[in-house]
Amino acid sequence: MRIDSHAHGHAVNLNGSPKEYIARCKEEGVDAVVLIAKPDPLFASKKRMGSFVIPVAIIDIDEAKKDDIHRLFDQGAAGIKFICPNHPYGDERYFPFYKAIKERDGVAVFHTGYLMHDPEYTRYRVKLDDMRTSHIDTIERWVPHLRVLMAHFGNPHWEECWKMAWAHPTVYADLSGGTAIHRSMLMWREMFAPNGALMSDCLGKVCFGSDTQYFGEAHRFGPYIDFYERLFNEVGAPEELREKVNAGNILSLFKLEGL
Image 1: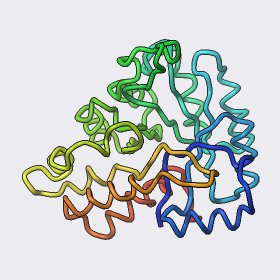
Image 2: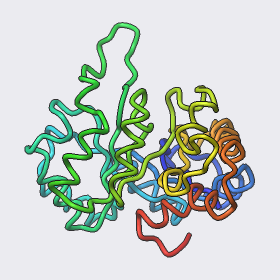
Image 3: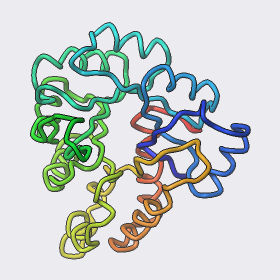
Image 4: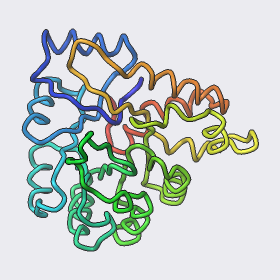
């Protein structure tokens, strides 16, 4: 089984039947997705696609209220996605959100590291430092054992992200999007198997993810499947560890019995 921990798109755009689409995804290598979207299209997609979609709602971290978190979980959200903060993720003004997610036994998904910009630099006027994975350390100290998924492995602060996942038992990361799949396997081998010795508990905190679009005519998650398989082979990951990265960690994070 393989679950994409970082997916986008709206099932309302899907041509054809959900059953046929899910079968095609499974044939190409993905059995379910953590769909990250704004609430209305998210819940419409969940309703149409059933267990294929694990719903994570995007909120505006600087405009939302604590009650919005509870409302989204009441509607069926399994997690909340944070991105583009006006202040560091670890700022105390955001703690009520994190505490609410923990109260609802959900998952906090954070965009970490670099965020794209448009050619004119008019979108996403954010500070890279506000989205560093080091803020997860602060959050975990004040909201212990909050379940966290750090998207994009903190790109380009790879080592910092590795440390956060290593240090905190309920913190995981994906290697989705960005430039992670274009970096040398030498770098990843030394991160997860330094001097040739596989650190299973380190690689074991990684989740498969692509950050690509679903529900269209073509899929672009193929290169990410290839990248993860090369990584597994490079470090000599045993089958049980591969299964954990490909699906087991997401099933555990979202407390799912199965799909």
